[in-house]
Image (cartoon, rainbow, N blue to C red; front, side, top):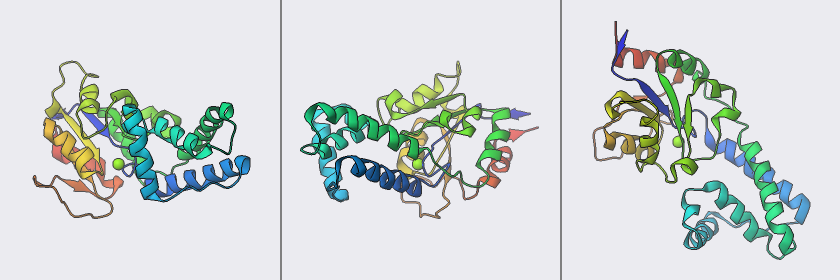
Length: 236
Ligand SMILES: [Mg+2]
């Protein structure tokens, strides 16, 4: 078999699993965990969150891509006045580890595991995520030879750090020999496409293509992925 591509990279959230129920469950349970310890907290709405995020980024630029630190700092803000000053950091870190554990209670989209197993036989597989899910805490971790989060990249997709680091995992690899698969039109598809990486858009929600460059090939169902890749990139 000859193939045009050597490496396939995958986004995680909303590509391998549905992220909203995952995060909602982790949020709800963590809030309860916290309130059981410190009493009721005014959590605020999305706007409050975004404002607080902006304020924290102004104080520490890392927060823009270190979303674990962001969450810990938000907990610390919320604990002010409820917890003694010398206990705030410890409790915030404990709350975050609880959140992170819950955040890994995910349900893969049907067909993910089979597709990864097949593809891992012919390609080097890697993860490129802006989130803080750790693929090696999941059973499918065994199919991936590397995983790059925003923490390692010190940046977020669509910027090029994640993709550059991925490329460095195989000597002399060209961007055109990489395929990136993800759900996000900008972070995944635009980011990879700009560098000359081949792209496949996971579009299970049947979203409209809203970018001003050519719509990439898409797929809706993980059961079809291995076949799509074989037909598109492999010749015998
Ligand atoms: Mg995603």
